[in-house]
Image 1 (tube, rainbow, N blue to C red):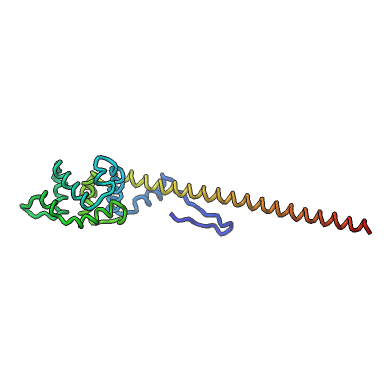
Image 2: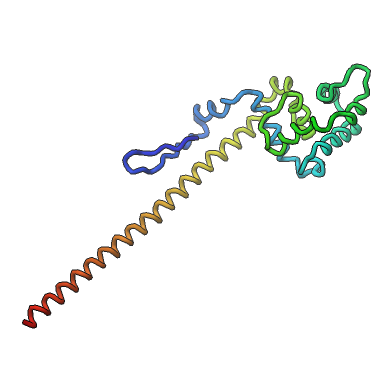
Length: 215
């Protein structure tokens, strides 16, 4: 959100959009469905990274992420999740999925790792669907999210947007407080300067009178 400046007194203008306004809803839904899917998955990761699979997700490495895939496979995947795995690991018909995961080039997990750690904010759909499985984000895959996901991610998007609005309000209050302090210092300095000039004038009058009477 931009911060405007008024020409008359150079005080910043922080426009706060009412949360029930049409403009709020328009800004909220301005991003594409894919971006909403990305935001939802990243928010889910932040929620679960210190949970059950913290040893894999909290400080993920490509090798740990591949190991987590093997673990989830051994625990049992739904048909949809198995399809996601088959696409990501490029499993050919008749090949064993577990063996394909174990033999998969671990360096190809760097894109997944970089997304989770925030080094990259975007990644390809197959990687994003895999991450959705790793953090148990629903609805997944993206094709299902298109049909059902708008209402699911809306709450997360609203929370993020509200935090941005609140941050702007905090910034505004901090600026105004700082401005008040500077103004008080300026007034104090002016009063001191005025008293100093007054004292000098009184002193001059005193010595001037003294000089006159001494003549």
